[in-house]
Amino acid sequence: MMGHFPLLDIAIGLTLIYTFLSLLTSELTEFMTTVLRWRAHHLQQGIMTLLGESIALRRNPEEFKNTITGRLYYSSLIASITQRSRRYRQSVGPSYIPSKVFADALLEVLQALPEVERTEPQLLQSADQTIGELDWLMSKVENADQLPSRLKDNLKRLANQTQTQTETTEQQMERFRHEVALWYEHSMDRLSGTYRRNVKAFTILIGSILAVLINADSLYMLRRISENTATRSVIIQNAIQIQGCQEDLSSSQCMDKMADLLDSTTIPIGWHPVNFQQQFPQFNLVYLLKAAIGWLLTGIAISMGSRFWFQILDQLVHVRETGEKPAATEEQQKTT
Image (tube, rainbow, N blue to C red; front, side, top):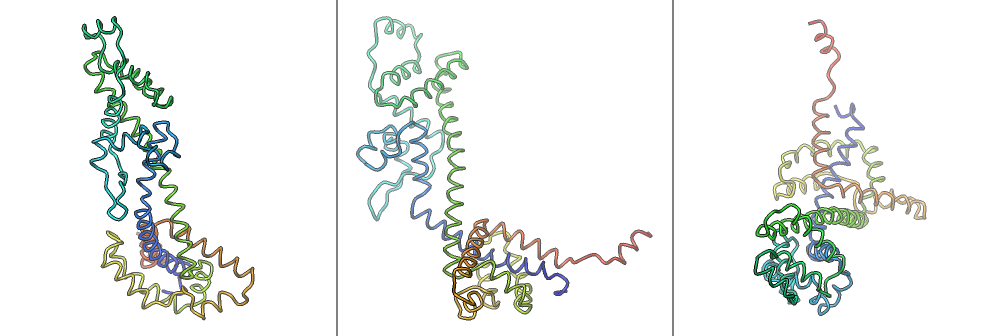
């Protein structure tokens, strides 16, 4: 059966290696993003952009406190979900803020703006309850010099939508809070896409660095697996052992299976003198450029994720075990 599917066997061998490297890269990427607090930083930058403030203000803690975003982060609602770093004794912004919490916190900051002096007609209207809470809030927003013009325009637009969709002044404030939450959710959807793209690029970088450190050259691995029938045979026999890991690839049982598999399989990875001699017959720019392309291809491949490669591995093994349907059986079905 082995000789009948050489291309399929080569694909299974490469996919198996990519699956293991993807698991390792995913763990490294998650560790680095946690240490660097990428989610919290991206969220803070996204909120500052949403509120029309300069991201450069984040560099100075004293200036940041006086921004609308700073007041938002130091509000009681968001401060309650903010963690504090034990090592550096600095406040760490949350990695996720629910839309309802953001809307309530922003309204809390806006309501704390300086009061606007009311004219006599406004006092009479207020006594007649013809001016609602939203109108007074928007008058504060209009006269607040510390609010960015972009934020004022967005709040006016949301207030106008609220007033056209709500008949009674009593319901306007609740409707306005809902509009602010939707505005935040739409912005966070775009921010999530940006964050995923940044993490994807970072994963390719981590994967490429890992490929260089362990010498996982895709072009060299492809050549070795295709030429070495014994190595390919052992890889195919052991690839079936990890099929039970589909539910949780990062489980200890699955990782033990992967470790045992790699220990018992000679794979063309590492800076062993044999690998180095075959990979670089002559240490010149041509072979070095070829290896660099192979390392980059490995980084791109393992950035696809371990689950992606495991699903492909599972399908390839299933196709190989099924095999081609005999022609005699097809002819018998036609006659019946």
